[in-house]
Length: 440
Image 1: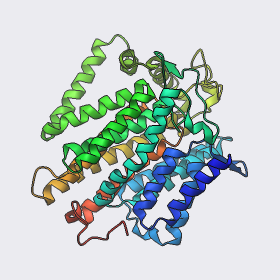
Image 2 (image 1 turned 90 degrees about the vertical axis):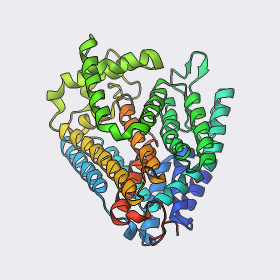
Image 3 (image 1 turned 120 degrees about the vertical axis):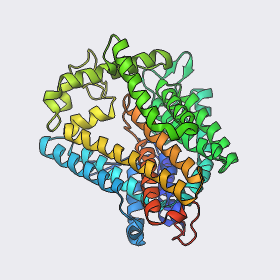
């Protein structure tokens, strides 16, 4: 770490620990996600502590020292996530004789990050505040990304360690990556928050903030010049197109299932080659993603019980990942399966199902409490549901191998917080009156 990186890390860590409100601490966590590249790290006893991981530790120390852990009220999502990490980590440690620190680090990142957001932003008012305040971070970040696109020089390189891959240009335009490790992950940032800012505009909650947020998110996706973020934007747009006819969501689900079956019959290739077809339009290496699913199913007998060493994937493709020498695992579900087996993959899917069930319940609670068809909470919740679908579609072609995981745990924590609030204090879904104000 160079001196500039050290100063930035200390500044964000101080903001997390000394922020007067828990809302402010949550915003500082997001600042770490945006401005601390994974190249900022220190090694302690052979364990790499990336900048974001250090910030999570600081957040945990703050929570314990200030007694804020008492504000965490467990929900079904919390329990499902904890059980998934416990099972997958234990199985991996028992099966494998290498990579212990990395696997345990993934679990700690998830639990610390998710837990911090659950404690820092427990109400709908906190979420609205966070979306407004996040604009003040997105503006300078987007400006740096635009400088990168125009000059073809990444400003985050000043922090050390940022480098481009072999495919950093496409159609004569730079594939910006900002502080992230890949252009697709930068684009994921823009596409994911796009859904929430659309909710602010469509729901007339805060149109000015929403419009600014939408513009910034679209700029980030454009600058990434990657096919996967474009697919994410299309997914989010489709979900919001369904909003006016959400009363018929069950019929829409059935229609989509029938459409998927028809596609299976029409396509000459198996259904998991659908990403390859999509990439012919949006760009990207869809064939790799599709073939990865094919070979993982073919070798299911090798990894279904407890996973298998990644070294055994070296012959899956005629090429390998230049960094590991093994197959480039670009599918989150396959990655979980290879690490800890099919039961771990099913537990991960169960977590997602629980999240969707909670989204449906929150929408129902919000509509019942306010005695009207639409409310601000419903718009934000629908935006979160759209983001969940976007993450799932994104995971078919990429894993979050840098600080992008912070985005995912933020969204999951928001669903968990609304789930608890809807059950215990349903009258507070539009106001914090008669409810513990989380920002103080």
